[in-house]
Length: 551
Image (tube, rainbow, N blue to C red; front, side, top):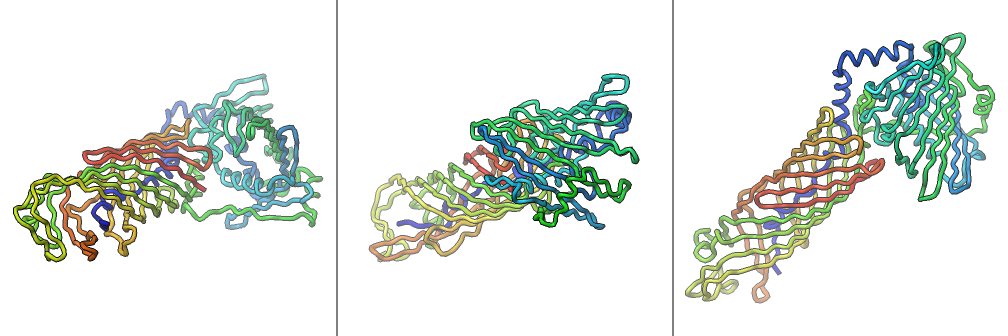
């Protein structure tokens, strides 16, 4: 059986390089931060005047996203009721937030096991909810300033309307881009905020049809400060095609604030209950190492993808390769050309590969990844033997002799299987809805049954694209450069009369290194995405499908 370690692996071993897509959702939103500063000045002044006119705190719009903005140290009570397929279950717990003098936040869940549902991991759900609210606490600019309107409803009352931004929200709460908000004011004070959805959306494993969040506010008489009295979220929809109703009631219990309010107990009964030493306590892990500088970016209202990812890719590539010269057993290429015509020697190659990749966002704009895979190659080598009048000895007539033959066209089918490993990195930037990225990968392959890995090949992939925020999707175009050598060196192993023979070869190839690429990326819920790419060039075409998961 013929075996070769490099001849067909290098042109076909390129694993999918799509780590840029892990960053696509982030960078158009960086541009949005600049866009917010550069909107029509007259319009911007008018929008700012609406909130300044009624002396509304800049924190009010983000109360719908996070109740943790109330104070640096606070206690609040959370009650969750789920009615699923006609049966209701209720759970209760307390959230305790404290901040030390260095600004480090500590979040804990205090609970009585008797008040937790037995059919679901309520603590884990509360921890996830709390972790999200922690991340969202600094999203003061998460609403769309261009959507702000207001009107008088009476001599001492008014309503302010606004929407949340399509960009400046993390992926796991991206459903807020469908929300419409009303702020109710009486005698210059905010009394209530209503948040409703304008279309259905998916939340966790629920399909929500109707969503309503109502936040009521109080004014502390002695300090004239507005505080949240209660937040009630009611959502109806389906889970596994069965009706479900969700209700979350968040009630502030106490504020501890060194900036002015001091200690304010809002509900003495609940305060006495949470102080019970028999209540158990669990700490909520808040901070993640990667991406570095991530919190700084998020505080500017810019979304970032989750830092870690795994993906599975399938690629089907066709390659036409022309050979310019070849030599075997170290023989002079001119001698070989007397019998085999290099100009009439071509290889038509199909390579199918499956690749498993893991990646991490080191910085918000920098991703690194590694991958392993397998490549199946089916090749047809077509060449012309010029013919010879007498037997030809190649190196040793006892090992290999070409008998007397007439000119003939030869078609040689070859099937090979390779293992592949590689590493790569991506840099990405964005402006408004546009983004650009550059990815570089290095791949090495090894023929099954061989001991040594090939020299490896570099691949470069620049992309530019456009984000469709309403659909959480991206479309892009670009190019791919595979850095082939002009020559391929390797060995072919075979047997003659039961004697193993190793035939070194030196082959000149003529392959266009560039192809053009078009593709799309679509986010599926919070963590999944699917990507498709089509590449075409003078000598090769390929189709790639990728399913990714981020966490």
